Length: 252
Image (cartoon, rainbow, N blue to C red; front, top):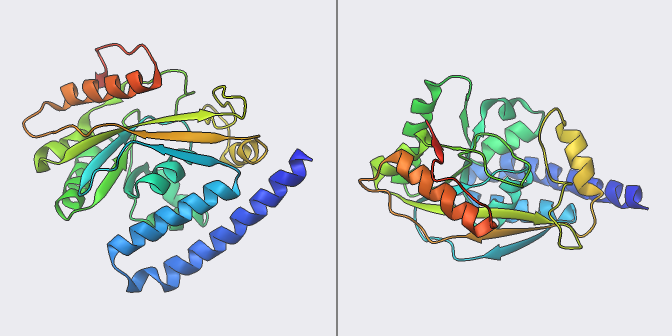
């Protein structure tokens, strides 16, 4: 029975992918960036619901340009955040080589970074700063990779420089996934050698999966040290998730 439900959910996602491709090809070129962002957020919410995922938003979205900073557990994080607070995301460069999905992600205004090349971070800092200056909202995962949801990995501070250089606000976001019994969900955890297809199947077969997207109070960045900001952001997100977080939070 669960397999039948999962196959139905994946079929619904497939139809949404086709609709997304058509929208990117024939509608996005003729509408404003703001409308593209709104439509992307709406589409992400539809995909999450098709997979059986309930998104619960908590807190208030900052009006105007901001750098969203969230913990990272799954590829579902992007759908969840976009459904609550549409944004342009910073993503690892190999995502753009995924068949179909990579093209769709690029249409959403994603900024790609080659994490293996430290010098590439400077290029992306300039891109984020330019996006913030033109009024965009940008989202990033400072852990740099996915965790298992039981703790927070160290926060890398270098991309936060984009907010500092533009005096943009930083809005921390805490993501928590739970199953139908309220326990932390293991279905969404995407670490190690697990493939995207394997992770997608685990999500599609899950029961009562939900994610809470908690938007915390924005922090000013003007005149701040990026490592101090990374530490404060990690501490606030960790506190919202109920973790014990060391004060030594930032890597660089």
